[in-house]
Image (cartoon, rainbow, N blue to C red; front, side):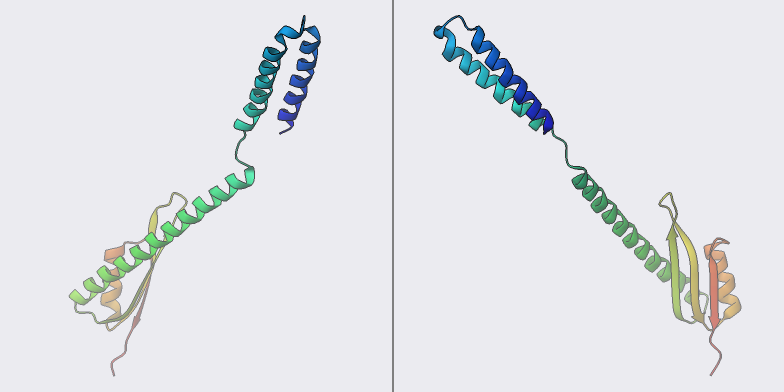
Length: 150
């Protein structure tokens, strides 16, 4: 905005000097038109080249980041639900009765989702522990709680 004020001052000073240099009144209307046009152009150029305020840019970045975080959270939750369903199905196919099953995943710095932990309550501690280790690998934590017979 200060640039626009400087330009306006410069154009006004130039207009004053040019009006003093006019040989007569015959070109006064044309000179007034040209100077008005120069003033309008000189004021509009800085205004057209203004950038977004930093606050608006920051706000846009924060909104985008929040939307991205929400998306990753939804993907992680869906991944956990799918893994729970698959693991429950595999345990039941092996004849293990599952009463509770919870899977936890995490996202690393590269935005990759990794298995963190599976926790289950079932009727066969050794069988569930072995099968879950086979299915999930050595990466995550496995917590198996056995239901004792009634």
